[in-house]
Image 1 (cartoon, rainbow, N blue to C red):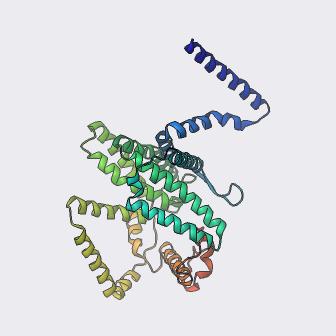
Image 2 (cartoon, helix red, strand yellow):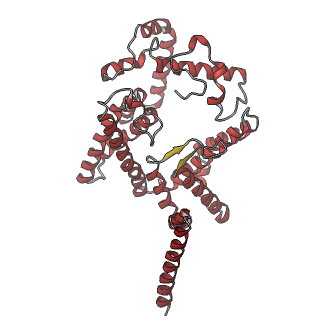
Image 3 (cartoon, rainbow, N blue to C red):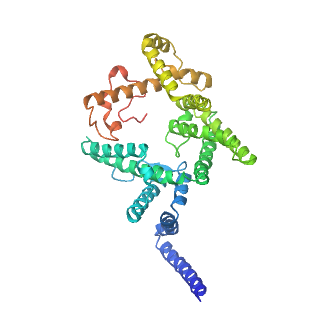
Length: 376
């Protein structure tokens, strides 16, 4: 009898939805068609939060940013609404059930995050642009809650950790293939490499950075003893795609960071003690300040600008004499230091730099890509 009632309920609700869908379509009310998807997401948030997290990770590389959805608010769809919803459900569960692993809360990283958020709240009150700062704080909250306080619970289980990574790697591979196909028809031109990843990434720097972050991970999967041979081969296939994507991104900072990661891996593998690394770091800093004039003179001799030739593009990394990209970074850093010097304690407010830095630029530091709102 119970099974019969369940069957009738399923058929009845299905027919009711079909009827309502037809009615809404007749009156051209199309948002109703999104209702089943919304109900599934609500179900996941309430009863399968880790599934919702995997969904958020999966759609992150293929999300699209809308700069202004009204009221000056920008939004990344569909990730921002999903993260905001996951945050609300998680906080409700924590406050309602009073259950959360206190070891996570007491961890030094968590404490540092709490201090950062509290200070961000205080400086948003004193901000020169309070609306901008509070918007920045709210978006920071749903990132921190979702990708730290929820994710860290998932990472206690190796199978969920591996799934989490692959949920990003697979759609990111699609983005890399999409980007390189657009580069191919433009003969892999270096200038085109700055924008061909749109609409999924705003520019090649964030695109290259995300590829770089997963290259060490995929490399590790290729040699992980817990992976079977077929999983290692698949990891090698994705590693090759990511490596080509990184090279063709023309993102010099990403290239440098992968090289730095290789050295770090060597240090970890050789089990070099932290105090030796600290001593090495202090020695390198001391040597730089001792010979900074000579070093800067040598750097100024480098006149190689950004280029479609990979060897020349690598050489341009240290060009602080003529390369507009490098010089503009220095200009932005100098502007930030001048802003800091003017208000060293409370600052100008979180998220306000792009709106306020322009008057702090000196004419001697301006480049061909200098701009008032950091949009070149």
